[in-house]
Length: 196
Image (tube, rainbow, N blue to C red; front, side, top):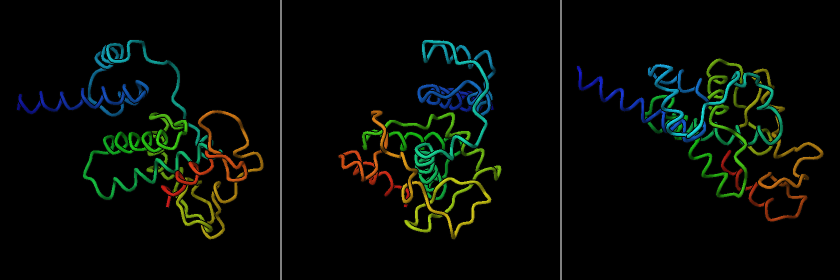
């Protein structure tokens, strides 16, 4: 039993370290491990070299409904759902792996990863609690994060029908739409492919 306890603790410490490296807030570590607050605080400072951020975690679902964040959240959640089907992992380990794959995809496409690991974790909680869901786009067939009352047969995603100013900004790492005639537009299209 003692050996099992040590192995379990080692696994939880490793999980906490991974989450800290990914930028998770201390509240996520508290929720997903059995380690004491004091131990997590020491671990956080040792791994990151700084004290954890203070304040409440983001709780509103509204952030996930805005244009670029919705595309990023949908990409992450599609990866998460796929891993849920093919890999036998604990829920938090699925979130970690899905987030790492999400980061790889955004980096490969030259995009800024708008979704933090804390928001990704919160997104999965929202889905589990029925506060958000995934809806199939009537045009492209991709699955996107929506409110649960969205009428599926009329839903069109933000890539098929972007807002008027979408993709026109000059921020580095932002998604560009085809009308911008830029190389980044092709990158955004590749990200969209990951949603199908």
